[in-house]
Length: 366
Ligand code: CP3
View 1 (tube, rainbow, N blue to C red):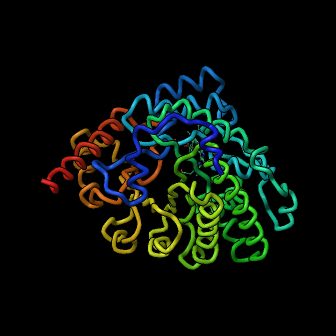
View 2 (cartoon, rainbow, N blue to C red):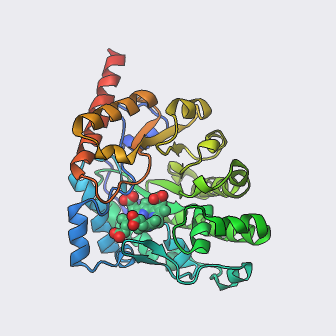
View 3 (cartoon, rainbow, N blue to C red):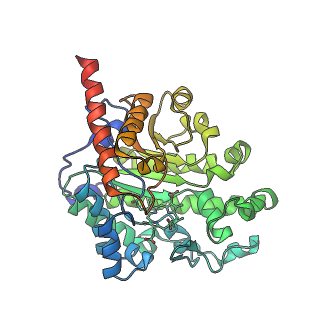
């Protein structure tokens, strides 16, 4: 499969994150930030005002999505870009209406209520047709990046998407969706497998379109018990990584799993086909290293650490790097950045990761 070569992308100038994701030594620790394109950036807010503020309109317009993806790359010394999109494009592709309400977040006017509602979902969704706009945005962005940094593609994970499709929006407990896990085992498996099959096609197509690394977001793992995770999250997560790599063969790219709140499952995930395990900020790093000695780790500064004053932020960032070490490590926050955060603090975070990790590396080689 040489689709990538056919697209003739500019040569990559900074492959730090790809080398780290493969477990290779790097001269400094690579860093990117979940939700690095978003409302905390004045240029993002201005862009939204100018182009109409509908979130999914931007996501569905490759030119606009590309421009927003590039905003943080222009401003910061980041080691990766992540395509501007959303995990909820998958439920939309399956025919469920989902809108982004200002100040409230995602809203499904007609969520799944009963197993019979699965009949409403579209069958045999063709990714290149239904989600072609994401693929076009990826190809365009890969060109516009001019090889500055790699481009990350992503998808929501089956359980997290199922939870949104049933809850119809955010929920603290996800109890409606969890009710399905306990009451409707057959319908649950059917839905999770439908999502898995589509996600596999979607991630493969993203790499063919130009994505150089993939992250799978299992953001609602925190609502599951270890028992439910093993039954309803892990098998589908593993299918995704295994099948995506199988289908891509020698064109495979590093894959990251972010299962937020799944501290209980790090050892299980270390047996999976993911190259990198992304940790939320509640995970003690030493424990994670013990449980996943064979994996690259990503994370995990408390996003609220960016509210601290400059010196405290520097200390917290240095402490994070000391606990992970400078090898088999990609720096990030433990979850997405918040809209009221100061972009200046992002600069401090990134610069500290780079300069401190480089100085630690120089000390050990001296
Ligand atoms: O990281 C990036 O810069 C890439 C873009 C990205 C967005 N959403 C943009 C976005 C990514 C990777 C996502 C993933 C996503 N979306 C997740 C997984 C990550 C996580 O947070 O756990 C989830 C759960 C969603 C669903 C979603 N989309 C929610 C809950 C919300 C509302 C959040 C809020 O703060 O209001 C969104 C909207 C969203 N997705 C925004 C952005 C920039 C804000 C939209 C706006 O401008 O109003």
